[in-house]
Image (cartoon, rainbow, N blue to C red; front, side):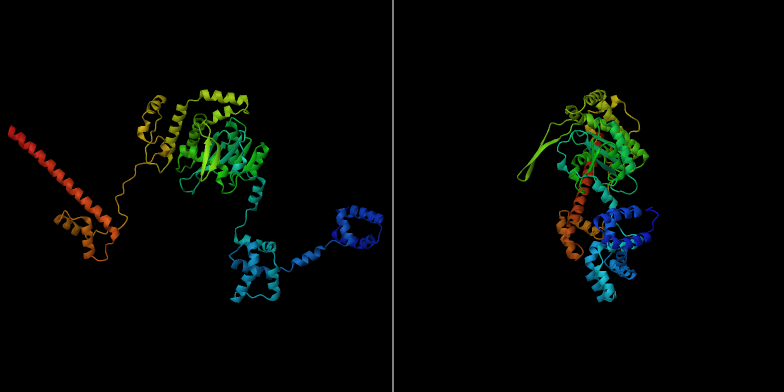
Length: 507
């Protein structure tokens, strides 16, 4: 029945019952309320306010909003544009001074009523009136959705970890852009366990939230321990409904660091340099083929790093005056740390021991070097030539004792030979007077470059500055070197002719 009653019928019924309700006893008021709420569908408290006359009429609110008509909106648009489109909270206190300045210079004319309405306007009303204008103009708006998402993800700082158990990971991206973010460079998604330093990584052809959840599925299958927590930065690829729902569904504690505070993610930040940049370098990689080579490289590298690469772990630090003293434990591999942790399941430890016995570090290193060579060959900026055929294990092992003589062993870090520069970047200041300088040197070979420079300054005032003396000294030095080399050649030629004459006389 409440749904079939119209609003006008309810208003008529309220007016008829109000006087009767106000003059009734408590019991009669109760019966009136029961009957009216059953007929109208109103809440009992709301009905009491209506029949008591304490409810504010909706028409008064609507009439109050009509004071901000089209004239106020047009004046507000002019003021907003004149302020360089600042936000409402900054525009509100600026309106009095800005309107006065615009009227003083003849840019705006407002009557007293319109000026008063413009002065009384609130920041919320400014946003409401300017919303269609900002939308049409394409003005920048705050990403309120991102703010709400951040509130759903708690913050964890570097001091909040407090020696967690294995299973709490930090996550970050490493971009292989080579100094330019143009196009679609490959991103490496990296996770590291805070307790054991176990690190895993995978290349992504695009930085997209659905790929992040798929990468987490791959990580969870490869990790020797369950993922209990995940801490990321404030990247939009992490802070989104997709990843929040994923972590909630799989029972993963999802936290984030503070914006622009990289020390909150110190464990993952150091792995970005000590592992990813160490094996992949800083060149640009993009495309499916480069992604496949990176997968091959990371497949061998993750095993080599977690089973055969010991790392230090900070135990404590304290300040002594201006210096900070840090104490580290004995270097250990992530596998060794997991095996030494008492809360790790025995089946997990047995699997780690079994896997360690089957791994050959030399074969893993050989696979890494071959993948790095392929990756370096894909890089257009690379000028070195890499071997096309794979080496046998015996050949690779035989070269280990001699690799240090060749310098850098990682193909991704080798630099090609620099092309010597043979061109000038500035005009030669001595181009016109060089014949004269050669005549002076031929006449007086013992004359030094400083005397010749002073002589040039006296003959050509204002053309040669004191800073150009070093250039002339190099020219004179080069001239003396050429003369000395010519003299040596002449001496060698004379010696050779002398030997020939002696041989002929002896015959």
